[in-house]
Amino acid sequence: MTLFLAGLLLGLAAAGAAALAWRRRVLEREIGELKRLSEVRREFVANVSHELRTPLASIKAYAETLSQGALEDAENRAGFVAEIEAAADRMANLVDDLLNLAALESGRRPPVFAPLALGKAAAEVVAVLMPLAGRKSVVLRLEPFHDIPPVRADREMVKRVFVNLIENAIKYSGDRGVVRVGAEASGDMVTAWVSDNGPGIPAESLPRLFERFYRVDKARSRELGGTGLGLAIVKHIVDVHGGTASAESVVGEGSTFRFTLPVHRG
Ligand SMILES: Nc1ncnc2c1ncn2[C@@H]1O[C@H](COP(=O)(O)OP(=O)(O)O)[C@@H](O)[C@H]1O
Ligand SMILES: [Mg+2]
Image (cartoon, rainbow, N blue to C red; front, side, top):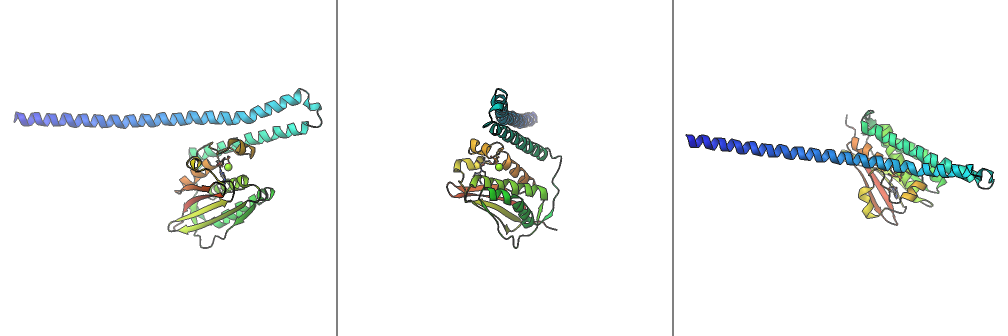
């Protein structure tokens, strides 16, 4: 009898120790995750500050040049003012994208899901971006969206996804580029795609493209008015729709970006 009791007590003690060890591992994991999040936040603030500082430094430098005599320089002053304007535009773009991303992430304005004709949304965006394509001598083509069922999506958000992807394709393709927009349906999902015959993206960059502030070529992105946030916004929107976003590319041949959205059932 005593032996039985002793065994029982030992068993209980062992179970208690195992439960404690388990609890401890859970806590350690949670603390690790919190540390990682605070690191991500710190890095984000550092990135934002750096991105704002670059155009700010440029505005300051040109303003100084003007105030220290270049105002009298009839040949160059207009150019300096144009540089100030361009830098201010870059800052405005960045602040817009940051606010967009913050609004999305806060969940303050949750998506409004409704049946959406994807072809119509794509056509509206293509019409808006046609002038940009024209200025860059890029052919922008919308493929027919036959037999694409309505998707369950927030109309404005999906249009934002198309804008960001098509703008990239136009911007990075340059002269004689051909940008195509289309979609395919399979099962419960619709896959929309934007393809270009631009410079392409090196394989090692593909996994990082959708990170905030990641750019393959920082100087070129800035020059083209980029913020490095466009694809992070795309990914966020596609995620809240329960879809996935991906990129495929061959350097020297072009890139194809795809995102999926669930078919509307109802
Ligand atoms: N169609 C494309 N062709 C080549 N590179 C691209 C394309 N789309 C995106 N990229 C690369 O991915 C980076 C991130 O894109 P994005 O998040 O939209 O930021 P950005 O503001 O720089 O356009 C770009 O800086 C560019 O290097
Ligand atoms: Mg972009």
